[in-house]
Image (tube, rainbow, N blue to C red; front, side, top):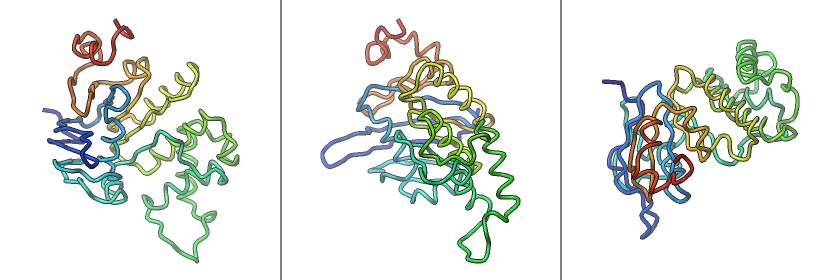
Length: 250
């Protein structure tokens, strides 16, 4: 039996009288690329917010690498090995590409607030930053203010920031939204490369991305998982076609 990196068991989330997540059960295996798809309003981003600690669970359990994380603060969940990106690009626009990535490495590399240590003199920190930039193919953009990057480059930078801390579980929320076909292809290749040997969970509306990237797919409809299977089986699942995919993959 495969090891489980992320486990959700009978998870519920309500906002007042509105039930958003209804008894969700989901096992995500260590090292797999797992996509969560579903119509708008199905609760996909809510699941990410519950897992990463931005929302409290109304009831149920969430485990990361075998440890309970439900309702922990986001920074504590991060320290247990989980990082995420957001639908809206989340970078420091006035800082350089290099500085954005370096900020993401302070805590994982053991750096704390200090008046006596200049970042530019921290050799290991700066070498690791260069390694991340090389991995995301942005070494030639290192000194450009992040806010001046093209949209697709900003998304690539955010992926770099997300993976910089060496988390073993990565959550990407619509990483290719708003991209052209060529930009999407490059983004998928980047995601595949930087998440090798890690566990990836991705929410994505572009079905070409989902079916090309994911090892397994879970379909979320009205706060419930109606199917979890391989891409081929999901593509041919009549219930999934009726509830979400429709003619898109028929």
